[in-house]
Image (cartoon, rainbow, N blue to C red; front, side, top):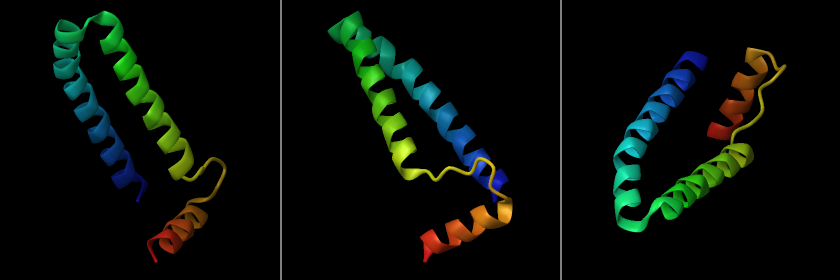
Amino acid sequence: MRGVAQSITVTAGRIGAALTSFVFPSLFALYGESFAITFLAIVAGISSIITFLLIPETKGKPLEETSREIQVLKA
């Protein structure tokens, strides 16, 4: 379970990094430095808020308890 979740997050991170490397130069060329940096900062901020609100904290919890919580969320 954790291995699958970790591979999904690593893949999402790599896709995000690849997209950023393509999107940032275009934003920079079209709208300027301040817009490009502000836009990416806003996207990062929104992503952080969504992660904080929607992903349950698992620090200090045994795997069995975390698995039960996920099963409840799936139902």
